[in-house]
Amino acid sequence: MSEPTTRLPVVFLPHGGGPWPFVDLRIGSKAEQAELAAYLRSIADLPKVKPKAVLLISAHWEEALPTVLTSARPPMLYDYYGFPPESYEVSWPAPGEPALARRVRELLQNAGMDSAENSERGFDHGTFVPLKLAYPNADMPTLQLSLKHGLDAAEHLALGRALAPLREEGVFIVGSGMTFHNLRAFGPQSSVAAAEFDAWLRDTACLPASERDRRLTDWTRAPSARKAHPREEHLLPLMVVAGAAGADLGQLGYRGKILDLAISAYHFG
Image 1 (cartoon, rainbow, N blue to C red):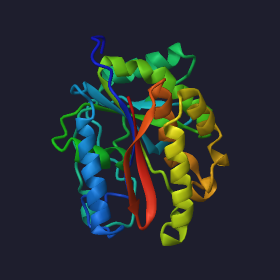
Image 2 (cartoon, rainbow, N blue to C red):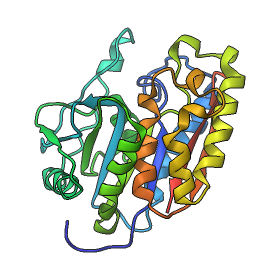
Image 3 (cartoon, rainbow, N blue to C red):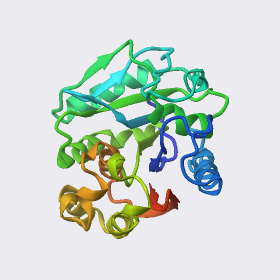
Image 4 (tube, rainbow, N blue to C red):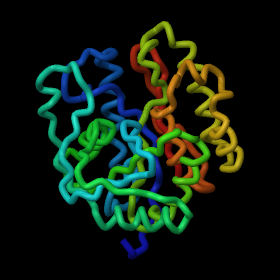
């Protein structure tokens, strides 16, 4: 992990619902699904050089401390229920990256942050859904990093800032969540709220870093914030990505809809 390379971008992406690209769940229109799937396939082309590894922060893993997977061969974690049997046969046997896990913990320690590790947990669907599309051969070494209990925005921005040196070390940092995640109001009835919050995110991501981080820290003041995110775990991967972005300005990487709800992705660097 010590040889410097071209600095890699950082990305926040929407991973959709459950194992939707690989099983017909009838979530949204086929056109909506095709557009999102095409975008997720395209993220492999964003780095100008092939990454040594992907570090993915998933909305679907929270721990008391930021925690890394240390298995050299992480299993699958089917962290959903009630789907067809084939949903539990999806496979993405990418290798883990124990050396990167050690480096992540070192960077967090240097920033004064405690961390932990887990040798048994597998890749959840926030990881294997987008990366199976981006890297279908399952040949990209991948490390998953958890969110921290409390879901404090400022803490996750600081977490991202601590990880920023990895961009110079060939690591592609990806945050996987959703810009709208209100399961009790998932449908056209929430289209206005989703559009309002999405517009605020687009404006925020493109601001200079100091103003961007201030607004992200106070994200609950955004229009329709709590309608879009009654609980913010699907937004917090964006905070980590924005922290790792440093002074890089954000840009809209993808804009689409699911069930008439606006969703978007953001690229930095």
